[in-house]
Image 1: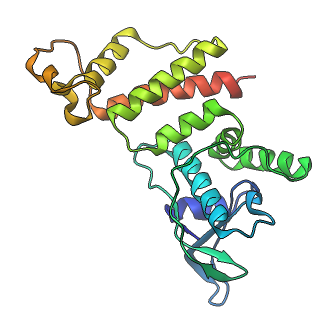
Image 2: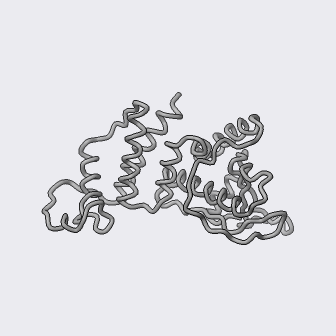
Image 3: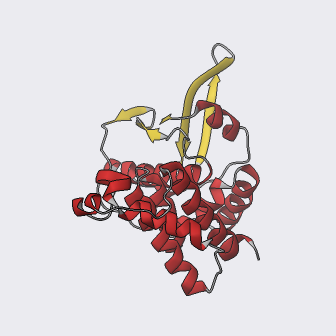
Length: 237
């Protein structure tokens, strides 16, 4: 059972479903009217009876969904799993654990995977990204960084990751040098980004005349890089 942007959930519940991340609900069948009861199923939990494992799968998929959402909207309301049901009964809550890893290819027939890929692509660009992130480490890293708190530290790590992946695949990101200088200058200097700075307090004593930027501009810079990379690596073939 999900918390989050119910308007988006309602829209996705009417689209062809992806078995990786199937959202449904939003209708009170007794009263024949809409409600905000939205749920998610995934074939990663098929035949799994360990509730701790199921909770972690749910948390991980939601994390990828949030990362894919924030790639396109910094202020997107994050989703979360607030209740797990097994055969209609509530299962005790288990918080997200610190371990992160690729979910890997699901153990289902290939035709279900192919159907999910087609349906996901027709529903929202987020689903192809989630599908890729279950098996591709570069997409996984990008979405996981975006699910983290938006900060100069997080954005700098994301920039470094995207640049590394792009170099490995020989992808040109088209980064404007002056914009990157403003980004790195702000991210690295305590006098500009405070306790979020990648460098220490001594930087505040140094006069900084290099162009800087706001955190929202930093988000735009790194997500633009990420979009260019993802498009060239996976969606421009």
